[in-house]
Structures are given as structure tokens and as C-alpha cells.
Image (cartoon, rainbow, N blue to C red; front, side, top):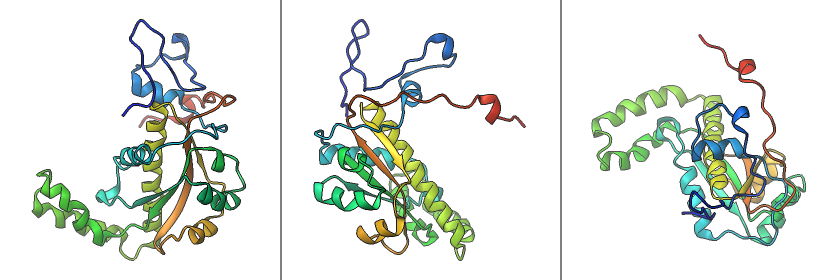
Length: 234
């Protein structure tokens, strides 16, 4: 899957809008295509309102997103791809009326499901079938999962948020690598989103994620705090 054109090494490379390449003196880090994707990502504000993504492109992004790690392989996430004008019109008023909701090719409602240890055997069945995990190990995973989450509503919710966040990050960087902009958003009415888009009782709308081709005007990645201010060694 490749949505941007990469030329040969001695020719120009077609890059996403707003890419910011750091000079060697600013970037004393090991580098490769993955690292460059991460370090050049920024939150897009301006999207091409005429651009679209196919259903297959959207499916590909979610498939990549679901490769992210989850506790006990619970995979307790769900994604609603808001891409039709009608669905965008329903979402925008309950998402602070942000223009990106209607201008971006798609806005994902990123949903975390309350962690449910009883789903562990079902989630691990394909792992056993693939020959990755012996069947006798499954109860050894289910028991601690039950100890961690059963009758623990705060832990169940925390895990829903963690899971959804991991999946979102994977989609963000996949989108960037394909020349697409993205913007994670927490500016929305969670209760209204839950109601309007018919979420289940055990589902939490953790965030929104707009994705699509960009138009001019987006900023490059903003400088971050020095590593010395955020890293301690023990």
C-alpha cells in the first residue's frame, strides 16, 4: 500500500505537505524512513475539502491501527469512519463545530471498550490456531486478566483509553507515511457522540481523528521539550 510517490535515490522525492527536514546539526539521531515519519508528523489544521479516501484505504489504515499492542490481546477497540456528508454533518455540531470534521476525507471516532477478561479465550483462539501460543497457556492469561479487571471499573476504563490511544497512534503514523495529514481531537461532546452514533454501554468515545490529504498552511512539527527535562535514569 503506497499513496505517495517515491522517486529513485538520485531524483526528487514527492513528500507530504508541510514536511520539515531537520539539518544534521539539529538531528543527531539515527534515522530511517520510520524515524523520519515520526519526527516530521504534525497536527494538520487545513485539509483539502475535495479529497476523498476509498473504503479500502480507510480499511487499510484501521488494519494497521489494530496491529498496535493491547493488554492480554484484548483488542478492545472499535473505529467509526465518518466519511459521508450526512455523517459529517451529524458529527460537526457536537465536535465544537471544528471545520476539519467536514473538510478532512474521514474522521474516525476512536472507541475504547471497557476491558472484559471473559473475552480472552476468544481473542487468543486465532493465536492458538496460528501455532503461536499453546492452548494450555490460554487459562494462564485469562486468570490474571480476571484478577486485574473483574469488578474493577476504573481499571476497565483506563484500559479502554490506553487501547484506543495505542491504535490511534499507529493510524497517525501510518497516515503520515502515506502522505496524509491527521489530527487527534478531544474537543467534542462525548455524551452526544455516544448517543448520535449509537455506541454500546461498554464503549467510550476516547477521541476523534481526522485524516486526509492536506492543503497549504499547516505548521511543521513544533519544538519539543529537551529530553533532559523529561528523562531520568534509574
